[in-house]
Image (cartoon, rainbow, N blue to C red; front, side, top):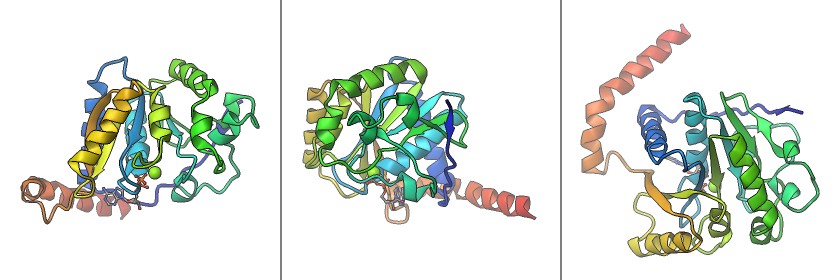
Length: 240
Ligand SMILES: Nc1ncnc2c1ncn2[C@@H]1O[C@H](COP(=O)(O)OP(=O)(O)O)[C@@H](O)[C@H]1O
Ligand SMILES: [Mg+2]
């Protein structure tokens, strides 16, 4: 039984954000065919994990890859409100706690090409225990047979163990770093924690760079600004 859900992305990322995501998608594809289940994490909340996980999933889908966005942030999920999901959905916490028996019941096809989603489900009191079960590892093994890429969104690693646990079932991790927020020491600490779980860090994504303040990026930005206005002109033209 196929379940479908409509996701509405109300935010416009802009030309540079779109290009950066395409680069990220390409870099991920160059990691090789064995890297398919990818964890997204960071030190702190709000560094941009969920935003990047969603848009990277859309990009992979657009490139013809069968992609699953798996929300393993059972503590503070944002997808239902951020993408204006109005219908009642079932999710990961219900499957892992045995309230829902079949995996099919928590997988939703979306309105984006080749992109499916598993929502986190209702907040549970014991997320790390749920993710630490054999059931989660078995579920990931089944899903890896069905998808080219599984992007696993997680809570921040600063003081929560969930991401390191989920990482045990992933092939690699992307570390999202908000520009100017985390320290080198903090990043090294979570990198070591992930490696200890057997989850290799594939790379880091520097997010929320202030283009106006940063001289290196601002020269890059100036170079490409003309394309931005071109894109805006093209879009307004398309609306007429
Ligand atoms: N590159 C960016 N530029 C501006 N705002 C961003 C960027 N990435 C994320 N945000 C915003 O920051 C907030 C936190 O992002 P989110 O992806 O939910 O973070 P996390 O999952 O790491 O907690 C959201 O309101 C999101 O829209
Ligand atoms: Mg998040």
